[in-house]
Image 1: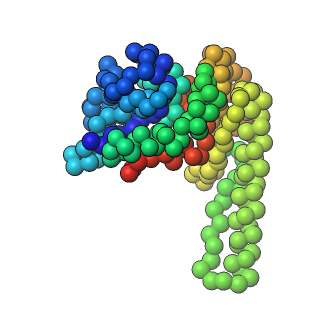
Image 2: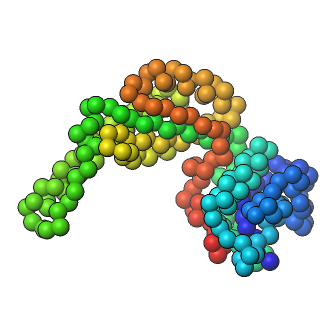
Image 3: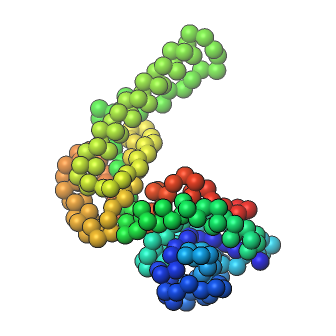
Length: 248
């Protein structure tokens, strides 16, 4: 039997609150394709899974939403370590081995993320001073002096965008004061850039964090700001855990 894996959590966060020896049904949750969701025990941890048949199921956009929904439901009850979307273990042994080989990392991560939530900010910056930096530089097909000149121009514009993004992310950090953050920046349209920020905060301070939104919209000029959360800590898992998978 193959298993589709959503996340790992602690037994105490699940409805029965005890260490089970066999997989048991989690009532009221539907997984990928409407499948029942079970808790698969492994030591002090439980892997939240659904039975999965590769011959009759396919991983698509709908599966992304179903995966996220299950992780979010589990997150309401305790700390979760989300598995990468599309993680499938083809056998019980493969699932158990994945937990055994990462047990120490799982334990450290659960301890670090207990009581923490992820908040997300999206800033769309449309600043007149950035208009020139937003111009896309096309590299010529030929090599030589012209190519090198265009390459330097392209790098210069990228540095200008990144400098602006760093300055804004520092300002945002001071306003929201998160425990940790991850920032990415990309160009949008021809006159703006999107700064995507994930903040790790104490779950007890979500309301305080949300209340700072109004202040942020007033201070961050020439920016469109969207806030969402709380979410499971997708952006704050060690790289090793992000890639844990069976035969996905």
